[in-house]
Image (cartoon, rainbow, N blue to C red; front, side):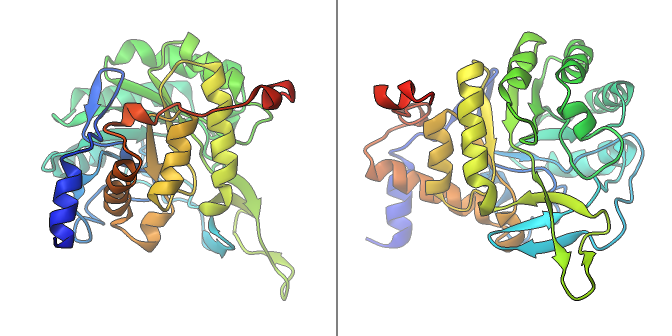
Length: 326
């Protein structure tokens, strides 16, 4: 039997489909905002229609040039970035990017960044009024560590997260997911606040604040001194945060953080994530999401699973572990 025949056979035996807040996704492997552009950048490298969902690069009301270079540093098992939410602005997003993405048979989730509650609302309303057929929802970025206004100032304050969710909820019936930061002592109160205020899901995690220094010049390598660490180095942090949030809320969780293989993704599913997003690995292999999707089919088949329901939230924690507070 050829490799293609084996792949075709396994694809018919495992149902990768999932549902989040009434939205049906063909598979649970999404691509993370800021790592896949607006789709066109990766279209020649992979089958975009085979991705569970594309979470677009963050869009704000006005175009943003982003931070001054240097904006990226490679680190052991990861990447430090300080892009600063560079984007085309909402007008270009709805007239150029959404129509292009509508050509593909996949779900689109628009990631929104803002420096005020009013800007979040204005951007969402603008997109809502110009939504294409495959735009199924929004991911609200309240957690970027690389901008002075908004960003972490929202995501590290429970009251501000509540204010953002309450303001946005009446503006759309589409999926409303809130992207939370790991840069807090406990993510549970933020997850609970999202649920209490009407969000449909939470995305965990955004990058972890990090720093790198050039020992020759004794200067920070990033122009903004600190930046956001991503990649395999943060995966254990992300899994722990998903685990914590899973215990605090019934909202669907979209896991993010250093996923490079189906085994990495499975850790998130077992802990309780309904879907995952591939991030930094897209810069290494633009078709990483397709590869992980296919690997996941093979992995589930090898474990005798027929659907994602067989694995999501199946973590086993012994009584002894619980007595230690886990």
